[in-house]
Length: 192
Image 1 (cartoon, rainbow, N blue to C red):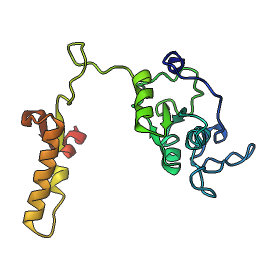
Image 2: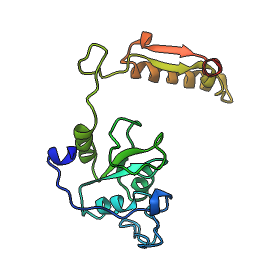
Image 3: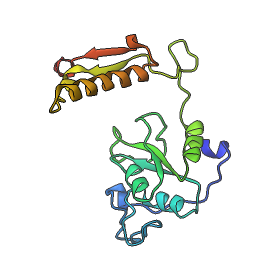
């Protein structure tokens, strides 16, 4: 309904794996769909029909459900963009549950622009702690020093360069603010 309010037009319902129980794209009752970009190869599933509709040009975008890869797998098999949003970011009202603590509604698109347009309509706007629009960078980035220390190259210069590159990437993610990077021992945190 949100997509239709945003200008989309409903074309129809698509074929899927029986009861969403597989990532193969096969349905014993209705047959197996052909992969439009790789004939003779699997589409992947369980949202296989949605992927085929988009990959074959019958629709610009299509919804699917993703519990353990049912949007991501067919998107990869059909050369599409596919998104599984954060669990709970979208309403699953009206979706037959398979594993409610994992189920999400996701979507397929042929272009990054179409993928983003659906996200603009379906995803809630990000908010910062003051209630406005979120900053472009997260408030802090966690860097697991004990995990990073496990990487050891054959020579010390390569190891030091890799560690420095990880710290530089974390700093960039924190908007260039070194204070936005929190260094921790992940093993100790997990034991807590």
